[in-house]
Length: 116
Image (cartoon, rainbow, N blue to C red):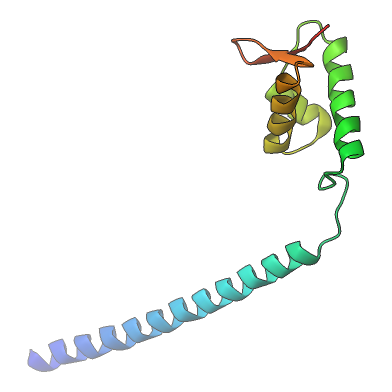
């Protein structure tokens, strides 16, 4: 019985050693991937979505206001996101700026309207 317990312990010890090695390899690969993503983001050319210049933001806000002006029932944030195919966070930031500038308004139901 002692020999079978010793054999089971040896087998589990070698399995544990292999698992630790696999985890270390996965951690190393993940760290390399994260470093690659960081450098890729830093060297990526700015596309039309990432362009945050004043005229690009101005033209986007004019497009949003134009669309809101066409819809008398207003639009929710998700509808604006789908209409312009932009990340929700970017649309929300733009809408917050338009509301703060009093060019758009937000009602209690979360619907945006263009101010007249």
